[in-house]
Image 1 (cartoon, rainbow, N blue to C red):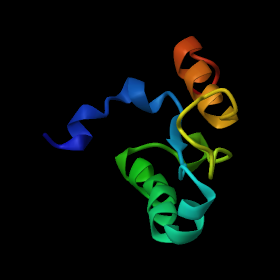
Image 2 (image 1 turned 180 degrees about the vertical axis):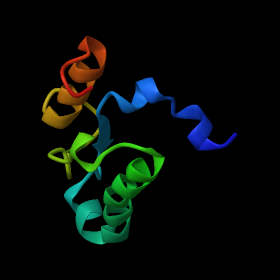
Image 3 (image 1 turned 90 degrees about the vertical axis):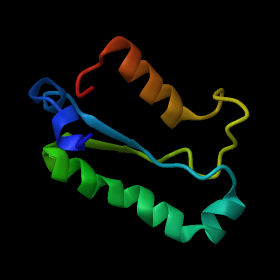
Length: 89
């Protein structure tokens, strides 16, 4: 199905969150292309209709393991925003 058909006007009223993360500092260093591709998803969101100022990039968990969310501030913010519908969500 065409992605443009899935994105409805009510979706575009909310923020688009990009969660960017590599699981270890080694991955951050060795997988720079993956990180670039994750940041490039901003362009995809714009192409789907979000305005640039609506796109919230959460990237402060770079190099943090996914084994626990306890110290992943970015992930906690993302979950809280989506669960509680905080402004910009």
